[in-house]
Image (cartoon, rainbow, N blue to C red; front, side, top):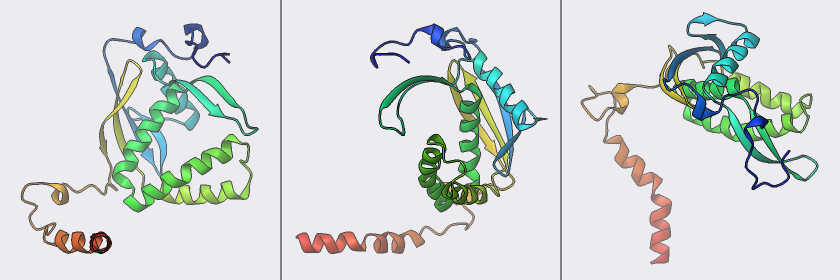
Length: 210
């Protein structure tokens, strides 16, 4: 732990990752496959969870990925500054978010994002076996039922970039989102009533305030 939160972190504090400036000058492209929200393969090679994370740790180390300078709030009250290295976890998190973007319904995705801080707080504070953690786990596990597919990522000098995603369970429809001819997939006239109804409360407020 460093005494002064303004103090620059010396390089020797980090041991699991290369300095991003010293990482390879050429990016590396990888793919990660998911099934029911779990990563199951890297570059098409099936791996156990432990082996997969170890492999991503090695990739992250090479490319200087996953360094974090964090001031956090401990359960007992004080603030603590820590230097963390999660090379494999950083890559996996980016990939998982990438596959969720095309497989999770909007409402489910937003609810999951609301639940995750509470879940993280419980785990951080040591309540892994608490019933509320198990309740949240059940909801999160249910949300992952259709989170499957492949994410393509670029690893480069400390950064992880999602550059492609595909899934047999994808909710993305080019016909519905195109600005060109959608062949009748979506009737833009439907938007008029939606906008008018959604803005009703604002029109009532405006009438009152006028």
